[in-house]
Image (cartoon, rainbow, N blue to C red; front, side, top):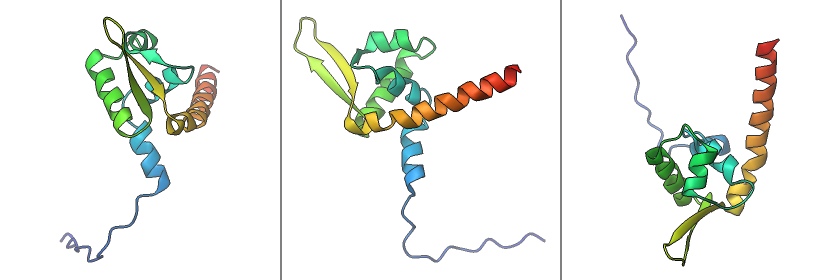
Length: 116
């Protein structure tokens, strides 16, 4: 006979931890690639498509909108003819770079280990 599932009677749910908050930002598909591509400076949409060839325009648009809404990137519409848009990292976005660099370094080690 299976055990009965008990209800949780706690009044206030616990605060999300810092790791959960960070992973909510960088955990999306292609998100780290977008941040990585913006680490050297502002990029236009077409340049990001070249930087990340497998990403579809639909997914790139979704990632850019999500990162902008979370305060990780800035969308800057240039007053040119035709108008152009550049994306760049905010201070918060720049603070994610060391974490992503650490992940890249571990990835290189795992790749090297697998080839041995």
